[in-house]
Image (tube, rainbow, N blue to C red; front, side, top):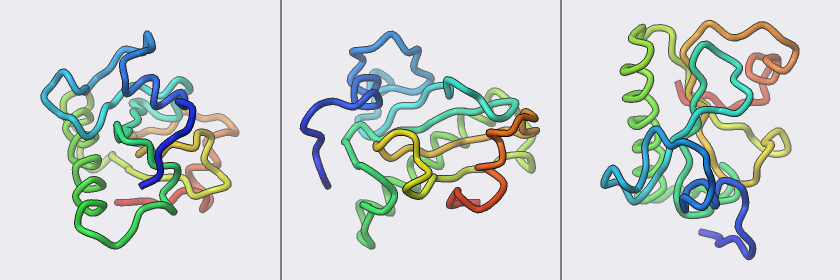
Length: 134
C-alpha cells in the first residue's frame, strides 16, 4: 500500500492531530480505522470510515486477504455506528467514490442513514459516481 509523502487531511484526522471529533478511533482499541461525521452531510446520518494507513483510492485495493479484511472491517464499523445512531437497517447505504469523483485522495467509506438531504451535490451519490458496497 502506498504511503503519503506529506499528510493528507484524513491522515491528520486518523493521527488525532486535528480537532475533528472521532466516532470510532484508535483509542477504542482499533488500530485499523477511524470514523467521523462528514463535514458536508448528504443524508440524515453521513459518516466516513477511514483507514489509518494512507491508501490513496479504491483503485489501490487489491484482491488479497488483507484488503478484503480491511473493507469488511470498514463496513462493520460504519454499520455499527449507524445502528447506534439511526436504527433503521433497510435505510443504510455504503459506498466508495471512484476517481476522479473522490474529493480526498485517501480511501474512505461513505456510510449513510437515509433519507438523503435534498441538494444538487447529492446527485453524485445517485447517478453512478459511487461504487456501492450494499
